[in-house]
Length: 241
Image: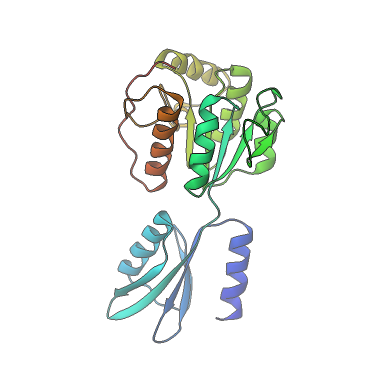
C-alpha cells in the first residue's frame, strides 16, 4: 500500500468517514472510494463504483469481478451506534436487541430512578440531559437515535440535536396525535419541513401489528435495519403509545 493511500485511510477512519479500499488483485493498484468521489491509482469503472457503494451500505467486504479483473473491496465503516433517549420499558428490550444486531447502545436519561444498572445491565448509561450528552457524542452517519420518554422536555431538545446531525435514523415514540403535537413544537423551534420529515414517528417502527414493549422494540429495530440498508419500509400503522 502506498503511503499516501495509507495516510488518507487512517485519517478517514479517525474522522469516521465511510470508505472502501479497492485493490486490483492482479496489479495491486488501489483506490479509496467514498459515497461521492474516489482517490487513488486504480482506474475505476462504473460497475466497481456501484459495487463499492453498495458494499458500504451493506457493510460487507468481498471480491467482485468487473471489466475483466478481480477487485477486493474492503469496507471501513464507523461503528454502528444507537442512542436511546429514555430509560423506559421499551428501551429495556430494545437495547439488548440492538446490541445483538451489532450496535453500541447508549441510554440517556437524567431520571436516575429509571437509568440504573439493575434495569440496564452491561449497557452504557448517561444521566445527563439528552441534548447535552448528544452534543458531546458527535452523531455521525452510522448513528441512530430513538426518543422514548413521551416528555417534551427530554425528547424535543434531543430531537433537535439529532436533526442537526447526519444521523441515518431518527425515531420518536408516540401516537399520531402525540407526534402531530411534537411536530408543531419543533416547527415553533425553527425546524423546517425537510428536517421534520426525517423523524420516523406517529407511530415509530414498521407495521408489525404488535403492542407489547418487546413487539414495539422489534418493530423499531426492524425499521432501523431497513433504513440502514436503504430500504425504508412502509409507514407504520397507527398504534396507541
